[in-house]
Amino acid sequence: MNKISLHQDRSALVVIDLQKGIVGYPSAPHDSNDVIANAALLADGFRKNSMPVFLVHVMRSADGKDGLHPVSDIPTRASEYQPDWADIVPQLGPKPGDIVITKRQWGAFYGTDLDLQLRRRGIDTIVLCGISTTMGVESTARFAYEFGYNQIFVEDAMSAMSGEEHDHAVKSVFPRIGQVRSTQDVLSAI
Image 1 (tube, rainbow, N blue to C red):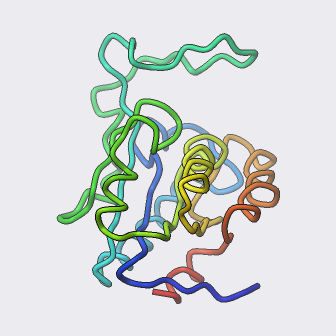
Image 2: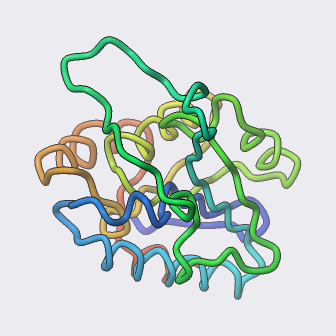
């Protein structure tokens, strides 16, 4: 496996949906607490090297009308959202200098200013992690690929609803559009 290279002035960390309402759901193959711990290590490493950290969270309006409601075989989770549901977990921040992106669907690009904020900072490489591998992370990654970003996927800093879902994305999708590495691989590169 090739060693990765991250340029301090052109790389950013993008953390997907590590928020109170999502990290409480079961996840596999990595426990949410392990994902949070690894993402926090990455965020601290990026911050120490003056590299941008983007914290993405999903939020719904009080009436839920801004959410997607597709006709589907597997219904979306209909749950009562607690007032702190969209709050980013305290282990991640936000800390001074972090950029918080609020989205209304799985992916972090559509309907947000993520692309604008990355491009204005001269970012061409994003390091992606978060929950869920096959929803928020993968949807964001597909847009990033189409927008021309280089991507590094941090396998042990993301998780899905099942190990099978996670493994499919990590082994079949992500290697086609970027590089899959570990938290330690990324930390060694910055």
